[in-house]
Length: 93
Image (cartoon, rainbow, N blue to C red; front, side, top):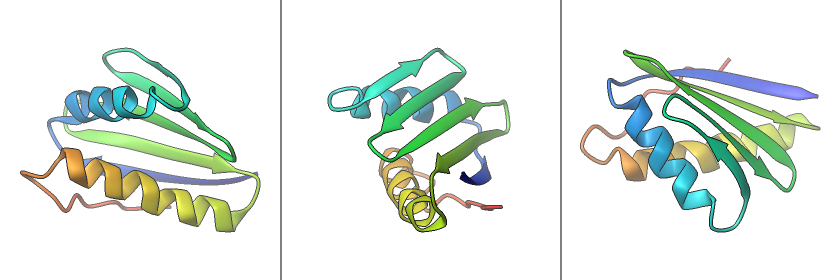
């Protein structure tokens, strides 16, 4: 399994997490609460955790190429919801 994790500085992490999860819930299997969310894509899983100063995003997939592609998908969608402070800074590791 390949994994990438980013800590995205924002004080609106819980808000963005909910918006993103609700958006993807129309087509994907999604579970979320106020502070955590899991989105199951056909070939990857994204886990989000909101803290007071940052949103932590983890992407897990079978191969590094899928992780790279999903990093872009998640970042693009988050930037759309965070348009007032976009582009958000993703420190993928």
